[in-house]
Image (cartoon, rainbow, N blue to C red; front, side, top):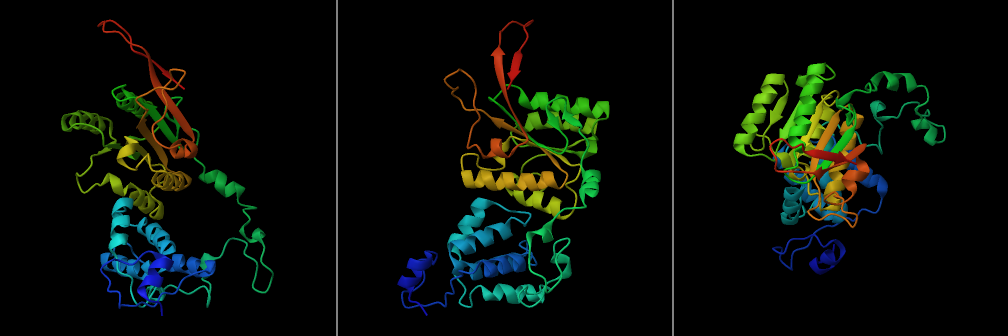
Length: 345
């Protein structure tokens, strides 16, 4: 049993409201297997169940930073995931005296089997070595599955002509009011008209428009048969996008879905490396499940030393996309008969 001062020194996670005389049973986890078991157990629990979410948060709170990582990853499986709200709630949670082991108890009630006691057959990797043989990474080999994977692979179809392919993550950067939204909408409609993609598979999330502007674009969506979402309408929350993508992956509705995020900053903090990296990791999972993501984002207000526009935010989006474009204005004029020329890199 540790006193509060020692607990604070070890975990740094107890709330200030706890009395100095109060003590807790803190069981630090130094075993990677235990952390993996906790992760497995949490997968059997529903983060959308608010009471279970809070209870298990308090149990994980006894693990300090390791507990938060588990709590955050588990929360991402919920439909209302918001990294800021999760962090704020975590700060206010009081560690439960019984500790993290109660997570296992609740999970077992939901049918979870402790890997230390038994291994569920459906959790074994393909070609897993039989019991009694030494372990080898060959147990996870994909040998013999090439044909199956080839059949699941999406054809090389351009969602946006010569810019964005089906089954890839593409981001288009441009300064505000350059016309990226109208350009992407026009290209999507051309692909629908040409029959390259189905309108019913397109989900355009218009999170950076006026009310009147949204209505105009919604008219186009209705005319050409694609879906358009608006923040805070019909219960849609752009900050919960990671959770929505997770649900589509879990429910096998990601495949053939084409999601347009306009603009990307409405769905994640592009200036925060951890947030951006986490969001793009989820996008990569969505792509692996057969989905397509096209993101629109802004460039910095100031250009680089060569006079070219540069993307805004950390490099995580650029690093994790299949294709990235920077749309830049190279010539403008006020003449009514002028042309507005653009350049992409």
